[in-house]
Length: 456
Image (tube, rainbow, N blue to C red; front, side, top):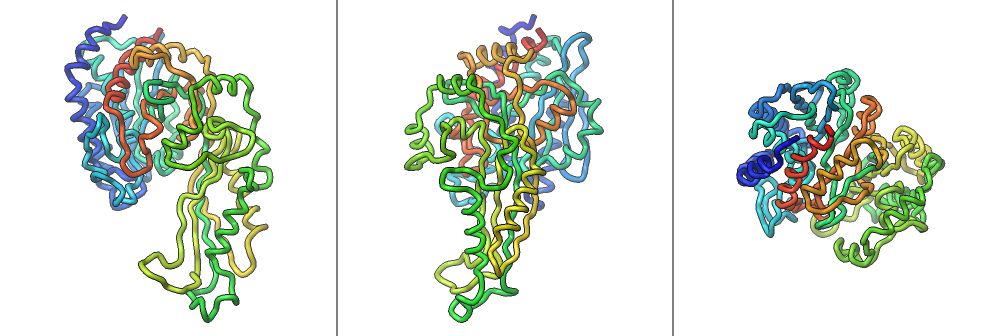
């Protein structure tokens, strides 16, 4: 049995050291989507590898056609389970920079939070498991199971390198359960374990019109404006009741179980308070479902960016030669990104306005996943979280996506535990991303219990 009192003393004495290491990692500008940050990506991978080496773990960089993956493992324990911790060191782009109160790669502590790109997604959360295992080793305690780590550098752009390498890594990554901390608690002071993630299908649309920008006075009324054609396509993809209009889109969507709907009704959730938190006048979405159901367990369609036409100061009266949009569909389990790509192409072909052509660019996709909330490892996870955070966790789903998870679970035939330490208002992917420092320390403490309770 682990000596938790010794672990707790060590964790308390090393809070500053754990903070310093988080600050170091957050200062590395590891934006996987930006090709100019290639050296920073390498720096981040080496930083993670060196941390594992300091702990005495067997460690290597797994190379592919892109950012390195960091793999580490503790010795195998005969007769005991093997846990694989998955995380990522890459981060989202920081735009728009002018909305950051402090520079995104100069981590700053304000009001008990640490502000930086990657603070909650996923450097801070991933590091909790590294620190907790280091505590076991520093206090000379024998691990009751084997722990493996796979920390990749391309999660934020679809895990392409890992996806290609995954079949060849089956034996190396073999495990009984994957542990991932890349999501949120239910709310402040209320930890959660997530048992479902949505998938994603991400695209770019490009609408082409005249061969060059045209004077809108001379040519307006004679040609189709690509920006207007794009706007029409986008608005026709979802009706006023929030239903996505791609033919066959809902064919694979399973109805929500009444047991889930009843469980979520018992959560302390207020539409009014949530709208106020987000700064919107009211909540909207697919008719016939609650806000939590729409966020966690229903498919969605969203526009992420619009391109084309004049963007500068003042006016410029043109008909743009092209216009584009970044869009995605969040998918529920059993929906296939490749099928959605075909449905989108069919929709565009049928609804393209005359006088323009449309290109559909498939950027990346991944399936959703739902796991059994009563799996063999759930009891140990709940106990670890309760001791780490001082309150029993609730069970929730998460509307976000970690596309590679479903592939890993299918390949490895294992369970998965999604144990998020973040908060809804952490601003992942947004300016002023943050992570509550106390949740960082509580996450480390919960993780320090996890190894013992998963083994038993």
